[in-house]
Amino acid sequence: MLLKGTLAAYAVSFVAVAGLAVAPALADTLFWQGAPGGDWDTASNWYNWDTSATATHVPTSDDSVYVDNHLSTAGMVNISGPGNALSLRVGELGTGVPSGILTGYGELTVADTLLNNGEIVAYGWGQQRTLDLNSAPLVNSAPLVENTVENLPGQTRGWYAFQGGRLELPTLTQGSGRWWWGENPGDDSPDLINSILLSPSGSQLTPIFDIALLANDRNELPAGTTGTIVGLWELQVGTDGQGGEWDGLLDLIIRYDDYSVDVALYNNPDLFPEDLRLYHFADNQWTDITDLDSFGEIFGQIGANGLDAGAFSYLAVGFDIRLEGTTDPTIPEPASLALLMAGMGGLGAYLRRRASR
Image (cartoon, rainbow, N blue to C red):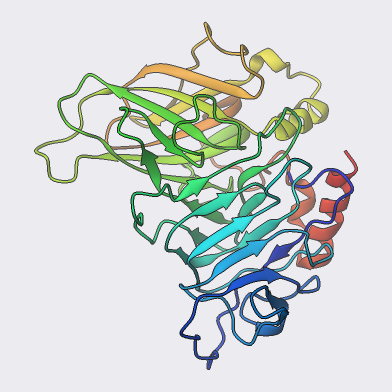
């Protein structure tokens, strides 16, 4: 995972701190200017565009917040604790390589629009932790998740979960009968890494989707799972009291992490690109649900048709995923081997290697 190219890229962190400054009454536009290792909850790490000076407060639910390369050099820091923003934009607004990273865990309440043109990473630092971006409702019917830069083959814009991380995002619809997780609603071809397009059918009930991206070392991973996991999702389908469980079928398109696939193929010469599959876990078994008719037509996408998802299950993209008698606790994330190093130094070294790709 993570950045390519030569432009500066950086991340911000949330650290729960007692006695934060009182929020101002007026909305401000705040740009990240902190050095590597800076915290979201340090006012001096932000630049107030409206006053042309260093901010005197951390972002609040009234503020528009930008995490890009306008004012900061590269940096990678830990996220821990709550945060707020009216809107949050991660990455550049135009073309170019990703130029913003938001990483860590905690509840980040974005009241309006979350724009991801960079990389947003649930990173638990070896513990079971959640980056919750699903805590705010839509405002004025605006989509809570947007993306305005096409993520081309080999690029890394998108969503990730490592080291015990769990990423929660809203699943959105435009009223067309289709749903998007981690992608701009209306995008017929999801291109952000680990995003999903869902097309339900065959039921009189409207499905309510609750989806989370999981690191491969999450406790939720079914015991005894073996194989090479490229992406792992928890999928819940409800009906919000409409009367019974949802009884329809799902068509899915997932934009998998092609860089993780490259790493897996490099590390295991017995694997071949055509061995990549989409799996579904239900009834205590992993089942290959890959739609071979459409697989490979669009780079970086894999799909399934007519899935009976049930109320609770898991999805995984990878190679030879199955159950065996015991769980191997050392199963790594294929593209995150270097992220297993503790501390910011190891994470930064991984980013530099990925950036040179």
